[in-house]
Length: 512
Picture (spheres, rainbow, N blue to C red):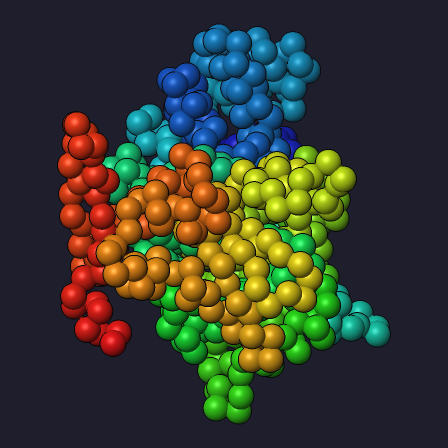
């Protein structure tokens, strides 16, 4: 037998009076609702104004099924914001002032609500019931619209499918942007934050020198024609298991890559074809998906678009080629912030992001051969501020030999690396003539930090930064067992001696 809700028969309602709060009436004309739970929520908030703060984190006003309950809830919010009591007396006064008292059932109904909650301390639990029913009602409405559109004359399946996907996506965003989802979507406890979030693992590189870190995006920047796409494709092939290393650095394989070939898809396809052959067909079909053409929406309108695209194709890696085609105006800070937000949401959803981007056009005031800095990256600074690592390819268009600079670091700095592109095969290798271990092996008497710095920088008097980089190179080789260090001596009448580094005997034997 149906239980009474205690509602006034004159009270307006979206639907006829319901049965028990937890019952979902299955008829096509009856949406899910929970009137007893709605009454319990409002009653609890009347008893304890602190309960309003708990409930407002879960419910929006539109989540109440009965319009009168929505009106009472808005009145409770107004009283709470004014730090006023929320009891029936205060509510009666407030609703009288707004002209809503009779519309919600009068002061008698307010006192009925105050006596409704079985337990005042369970306001949050009752609110979750109300929220769940509201979510089901919205999904039901989406389904009804879908059925109606299918039966219309001349219905187009593609249009219906696209409309349904857009509605579901909008509903998911609404749910995440309100109530509990809004307040806890990216929440972790403090211990997990410092132990798991900070526990960076390299995707490409080593813990000491990381080109691309998990949970942080990698941006590859440079002028046209210097091999950005060539380098990115090698990382992609390694990510799907067809290579082990790129530039002598290990790459951790992923599950699947979604490549956004937003601009020049034909050119991108030709570039990738250089490095694959028929043996790779099964892997490419299974683990690489390519989106050809512009994005289906703008990121300022759909901030979860990047994450949604990756999730829709079961990809854990997303490649954006290129950034200028994903953001319509690169110098617009608002659009750059929107992209940064979309990128961040993708990363928070477990998607690893790799981006290709361009440099600013060189002006007459830029000295030739100047070491690149982040301000040479084209567009708003918000684009690089949200990136975890930035690699800059410096060289002339079409030149097989270019330099890679590590402008923004995940851990230790990589390079600068002098690399050589094999444009016929689509591969890139580090120039062995400037590989620190190769240089050390060739130096019979070993090398000091300053001597290595001079060779790597090409300067007879290397600056302090170059010296420190050389020192880090040599200390890493020692730590890896590839080199040994002979400590120097302090100065005196005969002058001091700098520490010298030698290739280890084990390494010399291995490469001989």
